[in-house]
Length: 330
Ligand SMILES: [Zn+2]
Image 1 (tube, helix red, strand yellow):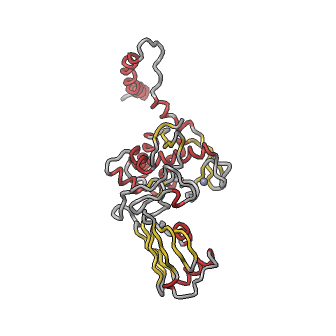
Image 2 (cartoon, protein in one colour; image 1 turned 180 degrees about the vertical axis):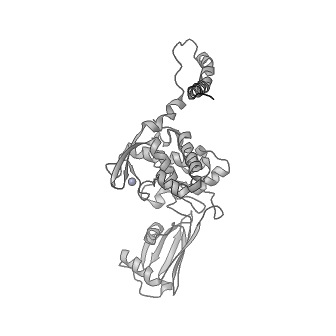
């Protein structure tokens, strides 16, 4: 029977053997220097996440943790764990970059005492190990391993534009093309442009969704927000002037004489995206919606599709974030 000490020694030998073998060759690369050669960059990067402190607001409390401990729960909370490794890695880098962005710019007004929070409507969802065990069941070990690897394999890597971490927003799925940030929010950021996205109804669950309201409910919801609207006539007359942008999303429409954007309409009726058609008839108002999310930045299902096609996580990020580079956080 092997003693634990012997086994431990053997492991030590195996771990250090490659380093010993490499030592003479490495020394030869730096002729004339008697000092140890400088540590390769990878060595610095592999420690990066563990060295970065993050303050996370989780409900009433603020937890002080490290990126290394925090990121796996974020990736698990925001992307299906069964996704391709390159997609999970792209997600890990997007999440890490998002955190760096706020570490540099200072926290949002919503939580001045924390860099990020666990509210998915504000920052990113976070899946605790207990929740992950419940959600993943028998897959828990395998999925945890996939996600840990996605975080570790990209340790310290972030997305940069002009040398600074980008606002790495993402969404679930788009209908053929993502949206530019200026189409959804006030700021038109140069790296958040509309790009094509390969996911379809064949690969995305609930890609097509339908929201139906009784005319009375539609009217009550709309008038609560836009009391000046005139919805006194026939239902079929309520909605008109629907204009689409080049990505297939509703740019604007007119309801009861009030013109609003597709984004505002989406928020008002909790539609899965601003890519919709709407029909108003006698008995119902029906939205037919494609995709899920605001549509800006990386599409997660698109990322998974690109990964299936053989793209690396770096290629996926550079597909969705225009003109960026990927590298270690300075
Ligand atoms: Zn937040």
